[in-house]
Length: 154
Image 1 (cartoon, one colour):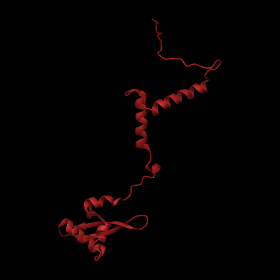
Image 2 (cartoon, one colour):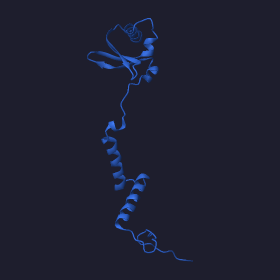
Image 3 (cartoon, one colour):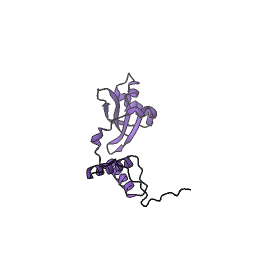
Image 4 (cartoon, helix red, strand yellow):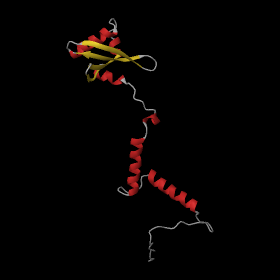
């Protein structure tokens, strides 16, 4: 039976064409390609310094990248209002309680003007006496009313 050959450094040398040798520039790019491929394919062992370095780069990208690069501006989305019957309590401030009310709910009470419709909606929902401090229409880019921000005092 034939004996196998032991490799001392456990790597197999690459075969070159006769007379070809790697220049310093080609060695650099070959090594850079190897590192890039291993990084993209995430083939470094967990706990190795290369793995930790990749994780550090990812975290740095997440926390240090300005939001303006992604044009990701928070927009008012009143789509969840239908799941909460058209009224969302935003919070309490020194000037009163703040609510978001869906415009479809206000327009469903068509004979009433928006201020009176908002007050009636909140009275039905809260079942408490309250007074209206302000009602501001929320519009999209085209000027369509999406809802109303309302401040009330109890």
